[in-house]
Image (cartoon, rainbow, N blue to C red; front, side, top):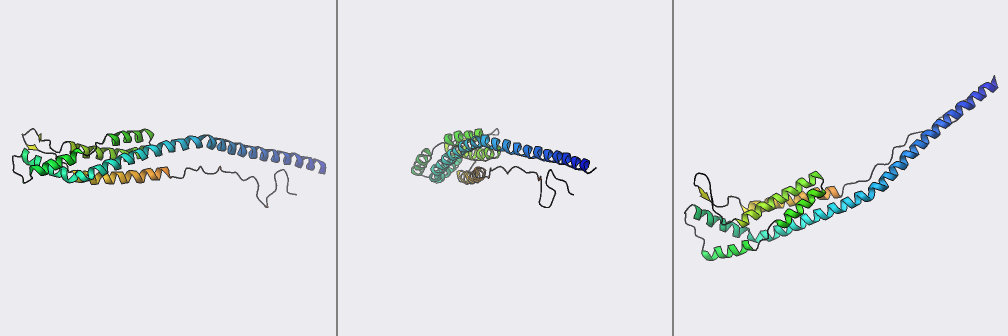
Amino acid sequence: MIAVVGGGGALLGAAVGGAAAVKAATVQARHGQETARLAYEGPIDAARRTAQRAAYARLLTSAHEFHAAATPALGAARLLIKATDARARNEPHNITEQALDRAQAAVAQTIGAAEVVAAAQHVRLEGPPHIAVAANAVDEKAQELAYVFAHAEQIYEDMTGHRYGVEQSASDLHVLLTLAIERFTESASAHLNINRQAPAPRRRLLWRRGAARPGTLDQ
């Protein structure tokens, strides 16, 4: 009888030990798969972030260059728009021709927004979506400001015959462009510096101190 119990205990112990070994092998296999996945995706993720960083830097560079070139011409654009609006309404103004000539020269020196537009398209290509949204805001404000510079002496007429100059303010758009650049910088920085380290694989508890060891029976 004792031999039978002993033999049964040995068989049960072997079964428990075998199950534990299978579980341990499964955990190790999963850990190996996770390690292999990280080893494969790590370089791809690094390359993607490098491309994104280059695209973001290009947009920031072009946006800052356009912003800096526009700053000295803000007053000149305001002067031209004021004179143009007065001419459209057949109203007098006190701006001299010499002042208008200087204003025209200042506005003519501003650079267009073509570089900003191209850089924003690159950012939209690289993504992710929320960074593309921030890039769109920079693109939009740069193009609006460039439009005001290019049409500061343009006269418009609506369906009722009302004539007027450009209604947007170059100074206001310049401020909005500043804010858009700042928001894009914050969003891009947060995205590039996010912790992308994958969490360690979860491990299942196979044995703890004080419990019966796998492959043994409490006597």
